[in-house]
Amino acid sequence: MKQFIFLILFVHAFTISGQENWAFIGLNNEINDLIVEDVIPIVNADSGYTAVFFKVKKEYICYLLNEKQEVFKTLKIESVPQNFDVLTGSAYNAQKFTLYFSNDSKSKHGCISVDFDNGSYKIFEELNIDFKKERFISYVENSNNFYALTTVKNSSLLNLYHFDLEGKINSMQFDLSNETFETDNELPITLDALLFGKHSDGTVETIDTSIPNTLESTAALTKVYMNDNVIKLTNNTFQRFTYLIKLDVKGNTTKLSKIENKKFEKRNLRTNSNSFVLNTLFFDVYSDTNEIILNVFDTDSDAIIKNFHIKAGDSIPFKNTPFIHEVVNTNSYRELEKTARFIRKVNSSNIGISAYPYKDYYILTLGASEKIQSGELAIIGGVLGGMIGAAVFSAFDSYNRTQSTRIECIFDQQFNHVEGDIPKNGFDLIQAYIKEKTLKRAKLQTVFKYHDKYIWGYYHSAGKYYSFYQFTPK
Image (cartoon, rainbow, N blue to C red):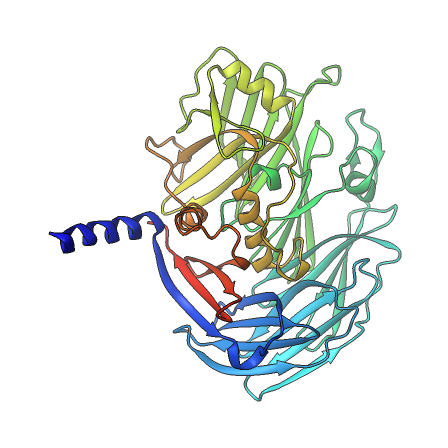
């Protein structure tokens, strides 16, 4: 009978966490009494190899895991330059991995190239790049490529820098000078002024659309996405138009789409708008004091797929949750009773929308957020955005401390509403496991994706080992 009860409890615990061991790295023989300061995991999506870099003082201890998550190669990097303050991104090819760094002001860049195949590494202390006449937009990763995107000051020129594995940098320029960017008063401005002028909050978010993103991230007025060698830059500084710029990295071409908010009235000062990109889908949301309008477009054809209206006094037939309002500084929320109140809160705050694919469906979140302080998790290598692994980690940190007013919805491929409960995603499973095992304050936590699995890990300082666990949404 006792064995039966234990089995029930074990199955129940496993069901709650959805957790399985993924990898284990013992560091006892490598670090002695030194303190591990950072951990940087990088997944080679092509080979299935995962490189894990542990920073110890000015050194990096490097491990390469095979596709079975077994350690089969190690390497030590000695005396990393002092100006390598911020890890900005990475690139890979086979067993070669390159980490890119900058100083805090982005005035200096360098990289470390590690070749596990022959057990060697190279340090490039100063890369040939200078942003003095430009404004930095974002670092962007795409598979095994790493880029920096900037705008030339007081112009409509975009510069894209491609960093290769050996520290060489190639650049290309996209000229949008013949395009029209304008304020709500129809005054022409440059792209630079649109992105960084006094009416913009200056915040740029780099978005990984393969994961759940909170409204705290997607409410940014400027967002950068990359998929299949196409960089997409969106901007919602002004309410009249949503700007979507597509940069084809391989073809060196650009396309500007101006999505007009049909309900916009210049005399109405209490309006709000934002957007979100998911592969070839473009979500555009606009609100005033009486309604919220959501449009779904196809970015290839610019054709509208679906249109949704939320009006004060009406019910919302396409929502799968109540109106959720996060309570400040707590882990609880309360439900708003009326559509009109939901509209008022969304319109008076930072409106946002996010979506991610789940099986044959899309999970969509619509609402608004308030800026809150980041959580207690350590940002990988000081990265605040740009690096894919760090972007996933940062999204999880934000997901863990969201403060928003929102509804969540399920749609099929044609954006017809689907009834049912919102499924648990990878972040939900990790959160449940951390809570269950009381690991909120675990050291050097990391979160990244390995194919369709979510990987979470932490460092055990007493045992001097690092454990990774995998979580697979069902």
